[in-house]
Amino acid sequence: EILPEQDVERNGICAPGARVVGDRLHLFYQTYGNGARDAICHAVSDDGVHFDRDKSNPVFHPTGAWNVGRAIDAELFEWKGKYYLYYATRDPEMKVQMLGVATSTGPDAFGRGGWTDLSVDGPILKPELPWEGKCIEAASLCVHDGRLFMFYAGAFNNAPQQIGVAVSDDAVHFQRLSDKPFLSNGPPGSWNSSESGHPGVFMDDDGSTYLFYQGNDTKGKTWSLARQRVEWKDGKPVPAD
Image (cartoon, rainbow, N blue to C red):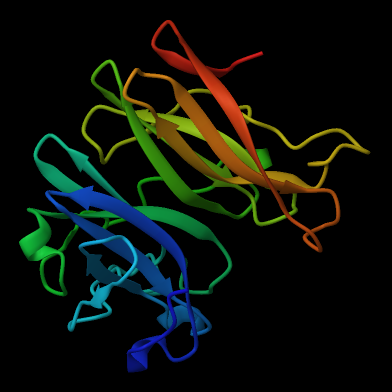
C-alpha cells in the first residue's frame, strides 16, 4: 500500500501509471480530491515496492486558456527517444474532459520544470462523437508497425463509458480509426451493461496484444476487470473472437 506522504497528497492519491526507464521504476500518479487543482506527481523505485517521492511534486499541470489547469490519468510513453506524458484535463467550466500531452528528454527531467506542454493551444483529443459524450480520458498506448495507437475511454463513467482507438505518426496528432467504439458496453443483463471503460493496453514481447478494462452492471456500485485479446489486421487493431 502506497499512502500519502507529501502535503500535496494529503487528500489522497490514485491512478498510478508505472514505466521502467533504465533500471528504475518511475511511477506517475495524480493527487485526488482537489477538483481543478489536481495534478500529476512522480516517484521512483529500485524494487517496485518502496518509492521515493519527487521533491518537486506535483511535477506537472497543463497551461493554456482552453483548460482549467487540472491533470489526471497520467500515461508515460517513450517514442523515438523522447518521453511523452499523456494526461486528461477539463475545460475552464470543469464540464468537458479532454486529453493533452507534454514531453520530457528523460528521467533526469521528470521533475517540475522538466516538461514541455505540447497542448498549450488546445487538446490532442476531445469529445466529438455522440458516444463520447462530454469525456475523453484514460489514454493507454502501444506501438505496432511503427505507428502509435492510443486506446481511450469515451464518455463519463456509466454514461455508458466505452473504448475508442486513435492512431498517430508523431505522438501528438491523433486520428480516430472509427466513429464507433472499439469496445462497447454489453447488452442489458450482461456483466458490463453499464460500461466498458478505462482501458489499459499491454503488448507482450512476442507481439501478443491484450486490452484490460473495467466494467459493471450496477451503474458503478460494483466493479469488475476483464481482458480482451486484440488482433492486428491491415495494420489496425480489432477485438479477437
